Amino acid sequence: MNARPLRYTIDTAWDAWHESQEATARDWLVVHYASLVKFVAGRLAAGLPRTVDTGDLVSAGVFGLMNAIDKFDPANGAKFETYAIPRIRGAILDGLRALDWVPRSVRSHSRSVQDAIARLEHQLGRTPTDEEIAEELQITTEELEKWLADIAAGSVGPLDHVAMDNTSHEKDAHLQPGRAMEEGELRGAMREEIAKLPEREQAILILYYDDGLTLAEIGDALGVTESRVSQIHTKAVLQLRSRLAAAGMG
Image (cartoon, rainbow, N blue to C red; front, top):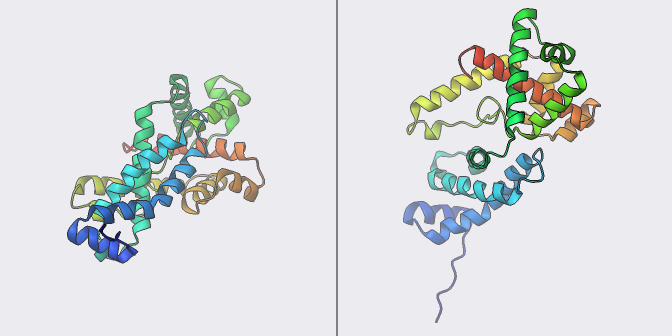
């Protein structure tokens, strides 16, 4: 006679996994929380070229989910979804970096724009306009917009490893205390620099990273096109990167 299949609830699955290391309980948890992987992968995939297979993102994200399940302790009182999402996202970003799908020309343009912003900020003492950046690069504003669009398509979660992630990493601090302190300082520095950006750039970053709106939804809210939001977002991120680099934190 076959054994009756195990039936779990959230609580009993966590108990079975932590107390007895029951593989079936872990598998149940992976299936139960699989929607988290699809959510994170879908959000990251929204700005990527169609040549990037969403299935690859999901596959990478599952490893992040499994890692989160292995390290999570329900007794600490934290919500698992809050704990898991940054780890899922990190695993997907690691997978994308391993694919190295961004063309070399786009990387070069990204560095050029970032360097131009840094030089102009130093000279002007303020955030440069698109026209000023284009003139510094000796290209037209139309070409700059094309560069920013290409850079946006090649940038995934540009701030995800720093300030915009409000999730506490204290649970891993005992494993990598130096790294936890460094990331905390970086998040703090990023928050300070965001507060110095023009209001429109601040609004876009906050709506995208804090409130979870898509670029299209932000465009509707601000009365501009999705592509324009993407360009402004990319310019703001490059500006933040140049400031952090100047402060020795980039």
